[in-house]
Image 1 (tube, rainbow, N blue to C red):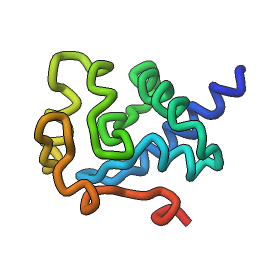
Image 2 (image 1 turned 90 degrees about the horizontal axis):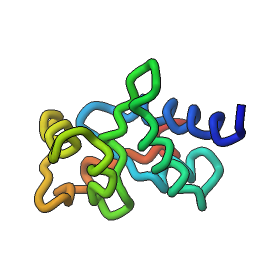
Image 3 (image 1 turned 180 degrees about the vertical axis):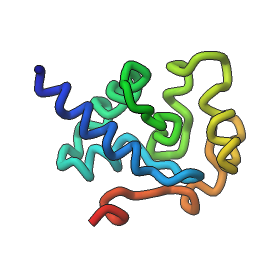
Image 4 (image 1 turned 120 degrees about the vertical axis):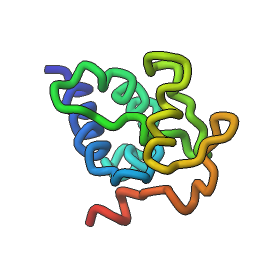
Length: 111
């Protein structure tokens, strides 16, 4: 097992804790895991999440500005946006509206 496998699994564990109707960022997960400079690695983990046995709500992980930067990794043209909207999150032009209100920070929520 590569060390990145273990990091990916930790990313999936955090992503599974994001509440319905909320989002977090790649950087917030990385910071929570003590790897603040590893936001890109969290992105790679989310990109690979469809290979996991237990579902990972990767659609709830966006960039630090609330942009759906990972949407090309979902099947279909707008699946990531559709999943978010089904949870009540408003998305306009790939940008989450009211981002501060729906943002979930694992470093504050998971003590």
